[in-house]
Length: 155
Length: 385
Image (tube, rainbow over all chains, first blue to last red; front, top):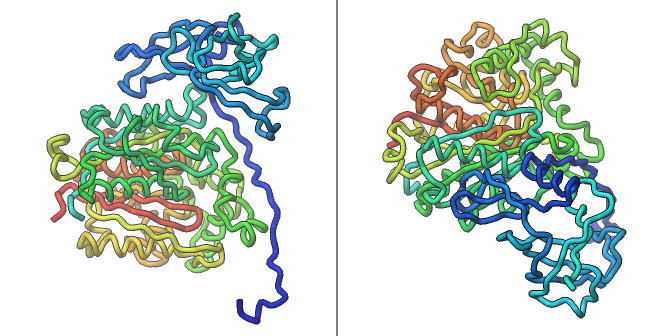
């Protein structure tokens, strides 16, 4: 560095980007969330061309590129495809979830794709890939994916 | 360019202020399905996808990945391009480069936005330098007001001249079923509408829209098999001029001037006013419709108000501008530039229905960014040499 910058300490500016968002769920996701909230039913869309059942429900099949018009009910029981355990209480973890927090990708019976959710009522060391789990619904349901509280092992 | 490139299909949504019935992927899907139908192609025919929207507008950063349910990009080459307001035109230029390179034969180009999901000025502010301009920034419209003021001071134009442009575009929008705002206004109504930033009244500026647009490009090897009258891309140009607000020449759009000079030179156009048949200008506010056609060389400096008052840019005039109603009628920002491109392509292909300009040989479309950037495309009926 040349002499002209001797004794200069670079300034730093602290700021926050504040951009509020409101995301429209759309008719397809809304239909899923209403059934979950009001009837504790887990629903999915089915492709009329390839027959694949999508959860989260898709309005169109991403592979066949045709509209999904059929809805099916899927089971509240399924299989753990894979999982991960958080042992530090990072800011991204909701306040009502205390470490260790277990995330699982769960393929519910009747669906062809898995959903991401919490595993609970089980110790991390007891979780295995392929284990059978069942949805535990939240007592107060507001129309979000957390209307399912978590998945617990099927006894 | 190794290959000549043509647009062989276009699709767009019916643009609205809010689309609560669909999420972003589902909105994109509507435009893509329409473009495929227009070109009579299937998703399996598409070799690569270019997609773009505004950074921070929906708060979804990896739109190229997230959007595949809507774009059809599952297990295909897909890339995101984003350049602010010019995004819609940039994605088209990107698609042109991919096809022109000879590496991809059929490319799907997508621009989209759900403006209803965020705070536009909050998101746009992130485009400006955090240490300098952002500390003293006045919002998205301020730069446009400063440009208009500088033009008025230099050439003696008035707010009535701006209002005349808005009256034109809002009238043209009546012919476009896809436009968001379809209501004719009078000069007096524009001037009586609330002042947002002097001299810009509410009816001088664009709305915020939810919408998507898709365009399919093909190389000369297949274009005419897909579409008997494709829209050939003759030339493109892009100019992004500055880092700080004070670097711009307020009152003139330098990026438009230099870009269009390149465009005319590439295509061998000597008198754009006589040789170009229709313009779809990314014109988010009325005064841009005066200033920027001077920078394009359609008329000389300070001559735009007279030219526009004489009806030359109205439907049926010498050089109709924004037959679609333009940005003042519809503005899903990441899609807006691509809608200009699609509308120009439809004019060349003879598919513009109620807003068709007769016998279009050359059409011009552009993108504009709030940092005074300009991207542009020259479209033509004949295959380039």
